[in-house]
Length: 121
Image 1 (cartoon, helix red, strand yellow):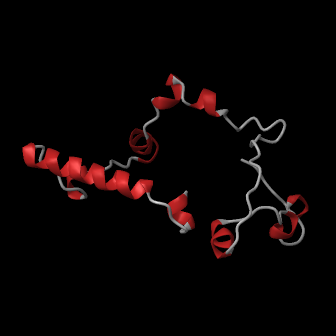
Image 2 (cartoon, one colour; image 1 turned 90 degrees about the vertical axis):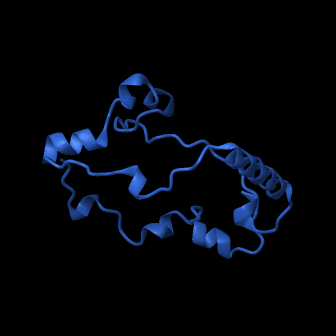
């Protein structure tokens, strides 16, 4: 546990210190966004809680199961059933044709030029 007092908290609005940081809503309001050079993110020096991405995907990190952990720590058993939230797709010949048709439409859409910033991403 980490305890913070008023002395450890930043003084004044945080956004004043990071004017170069733009959130999505600010970017989308901009009619003429400027290209910026991307900067590689690096954790603060000595930040031991930050796991490097290359190390995170190793075997040891894949075995964690949030449902199993909740059951062990809190006695909560998940009743999640994917079939309650989705519709099972039929995999017959007709469905394969529909998937081909949808893929063709997606390729056409992805090939179009757009001025919409969200679609252009």
